[in-house]
Image (cartoon, rainbow over all chains, first blue to last red; front, side, top):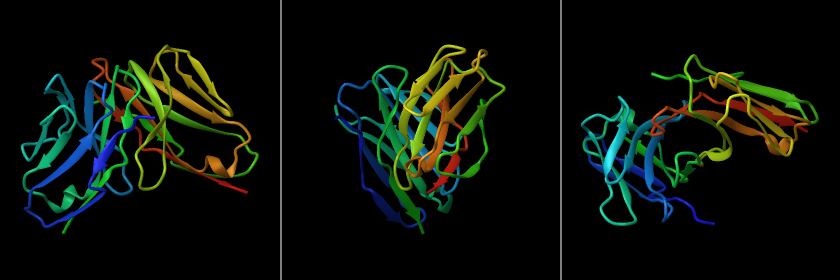
Length: 112
Length: 111
């Protein structure tokens, strides 16, 4: 069964460093999403991406964040200058139609 | 901003008992989804409800979407230890490009 994959599974970085989180969505899916989940808190929407552009973003998704689909398979989330409060699980999701989202296993980002 | 409130936050019951989890909002959602999340993993979709008043069954799980599409419930019959986990509801905005999650209900079913 097709699945969303994410790499790395765990990323440790120092405050102020740039990180890129990678996702490979399901191949025939058209809509892509990033979410984050701070430990013990709810899953929060960051951004949705369709047709090579951002279609919606939340207040969390400030200028420090960017997304890119550099080729036909990868979908990346970049955080330019990480802060301690960016430590969280980051989930990528993709859908074919506007209904069932398929989530990846997540990347645990730890900022020290 | 659309918000979803789930209740209860925590639920500990004995095997064989029935339970209901609620997901409420003051906003209307175009559709609502229920997920289950295991520790360290991404949410896994259980069901999507789209029509007001819709009821869907998945074995011992029954999902209902409120008539006004502002709330939903998940009922589990004869809970089993394998049902233990975090249950999340999530709703799409009308544009269908943003999914808002509730805070989750952490269920523990004791044998």
